[in-house]
Length: 310
Image 1: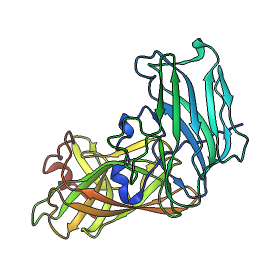
Image 2 (image 1 turned 90 degrees about the vertical axis):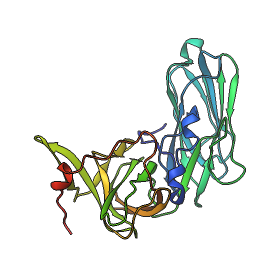
Image 3 (image 1 turned 120 degrees about the horizontal axis):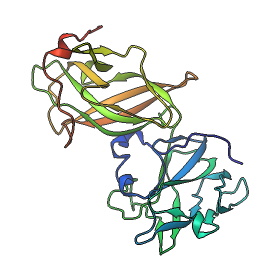
């Protein structure tokens, strides 16, 4: 049966900012993160709630997408599991509650897990899922006519982004750069990072600035100080680490020009895992704080105690 593992989801380097588009509204989804071509992938399908008007989810069926080779599926206590044999490339994995008491209540979240090998070519992999409830059912099977963005789809199929060797599987969301004015030498960039199997952010580069570093702001006594994280920023497996004003953030210094609201800034994130494997992620970050973003730290304080090392 299934071994202990860490589930993953998707990211496409050039479209990282769109990773969460549509996913927030999906109620059967995969967790954040991607999978490297030809690798074993642990798919944990998360059921957010039951069908409309229903009190519980009574069954879930996952259709194997083309190019995906099934290894096994994880049983759930109180549920009947029907799955193709190991090595299958088509068919479906189905879980059915054995009694109404074993069904997944609408107010609870649950995971249904299978594992397999992803294709050898990069691109989106769509897992179409059918959800049965005590009242009605939902087919999470909508796929965009073009591209991979699911925004606007009412019942999107869960998507896994399969990425090329050397591309990080880290999921990036809500990324942005604070705008600046002519003559300003520095600014910050912010985002949420989720690494499916754990890694470390060890470097950043951008043609928009002479220096790009990960910094931390924190109180020392009654003074807010900022320092570079010379050893990199740890991204524990499955845990979202937020880079935000007043905390961890990307510091861009020696700016090559003003960061105008509405512009985009190319940026390369560099990662290294516990085994020393190095990967990168190419992003394009919008300039300008999104609605609800934290305000910039007060002038003085942190920047007066900022230790530049260049």
